[in-house]
Length: 138
Image (tube, rainbow, N blue to C red):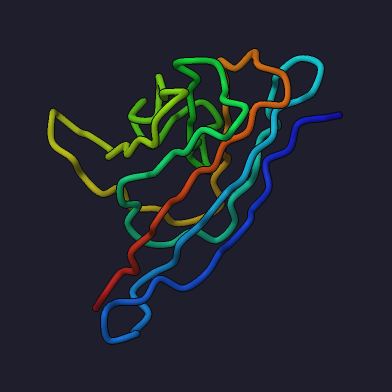
């Protein structure tokens, strides 16, 4: 069976007063059953500040230190997280905050981005990626 990355949820992110302050994007993945690869997934119309990203390995965990990258719309090799999501763990939920010069910094997104997963060789491995994107306020 071919691997999949699926946009599971793209829902409003609400504050305590139930006002929309952004959106939560949840991606579920299952690696290819024969070679452990994941296809790329286009995340459309992202606009706002990317907060720390949560990664959850599934019951069939990916290879230790697998990598997640979110590629900029104008450059398919530029990882907008600055390798923050590299070397993900196979046993624990992890939070990766985009870091610039040693400081956690929300990254501004505006457009369609490509999500890629590399470094996995476990057939049928599963995982979940949760991204919260805060809206730009005026």
